[in-house]
Length: 161
Image 1: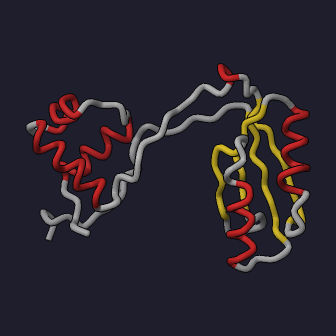
Image 2 (image 1 turned 45 degrees about the vertical axis):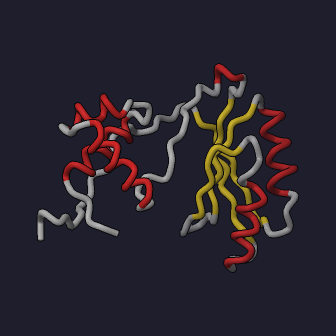
């Protein structure tokens, strides 16, 4: 993969903030002609730097009034067990995100549900019913916010060589 330059990073930062930007508006923000901007975005997509875009929803407005983080410990830590667990849980409609962790807990599952009974049923039916699960802790989420600022990091650019 080619090194990213400052313009690529500006494109990424602006799209990270708002993936709905039109190509014309994005080009204006980064100081490129729209055709050049579109070419760069397509290259970033083809190179696998941009892997898609997502939609942020107000879960409360959709009736999912409770969010929780569920920490799971597995009795077996081999790759197959972890992968099978993740593949089984991720498709559940309650799951917003799923993290494989190092440390005391093996997985962290961010879920959204209608009410506490729904949460209890999800934990019992989807998580603790699985033989490889040895421990579960559930914490309610009172509030959460996603950053709209792309993380700062050091990249070797073609300009810096």
